[in-house]
Image 1 (cartoon, rainbow, N blue to C red):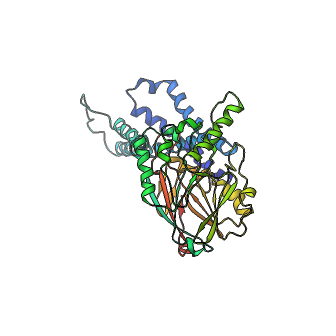
Image 2 (cartoon, rainbow, N blue to C red):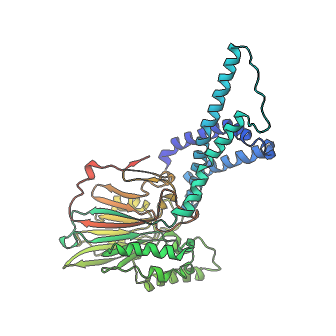
Image 3 (cartoon, helix red, strand yellow):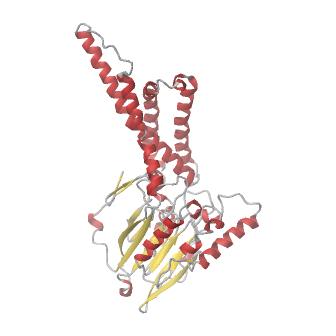
Length: 428
């Protein structure tokens, strides 16, 4: 993110300069609102802008939690979008004023229009229209809360692994991530997403961390739903940063440890094979591949780096393909790429795509990309791959706008990716 600092600095500077211009228009649009003419309105307006800009720079220089950084980024970009939508109306009004002034200079003043009792001055009308346009991002958030949060989407991807044994060619792998059960409020909708996953009939399934927000008891009422997730070759899971209880206040270390022990037991009770710095050998037709799983490790997190790849790869040298479950995608660039070339593909989550952005087959954008280089979809470097799932659940903002909850189905293919040289996913 430090490499993007000049761009972010320019955006923030433009943000502040625009505020000098916009505040007058806002006052005109809110002309009948007495508070808009008071000094306290000016203080309130500038405080919001400064808080978000300060938060942007704190997110760069301090290793704060993703939740805080995501909230700051989301708020900043929503404000920016609102102001960009409002700006044309102010420019239009100023242009109108300029034309009137030029006409006044070139012609004799005509009989002035006498406004009726219900007339709205043109400037006020334009400013009110601009404020209405600027409220669109807030309307989008409301829409995302109502319709996006449980709008599960199944994404199908072919995963090309040149060293894949022939017995595994064509089998299906499912992935979900970031359940965050403590945020749910609609069990029927959650169960519907599980049915969508099972209807795909995956041969084996990965869950890549963050079962809860902070406490294991959040799974009360949801354990039975997720216990239905089964697959012929097994369900394999890993822990995320929220699973350790670091976001909750505990009376003592023993209580926090018991919470983690209970979470580990929950994975077992659901029939999921929780991989904590270890591996499994998956056998089909006499051939094997490796499934590796590590505890949470993030290069951008202030929390302990618990992942031990040295333990996860132990006794796997003979396996032709190794698939890694690691919750935080920053782990891939920080450790996997430079030190573990034998890992063919890593599966992660964590970013949620910030639950806000644009995602199509060939283009994607979200404010989270200013924090994470790899944040959604499939990435390649050399012979290694990373897939980042944008999550099944939600955290903080109870909705999703443009980044809908994801169920990923991979078809494993024993060949090189034929589209790789010709296809590039564009990032904004």
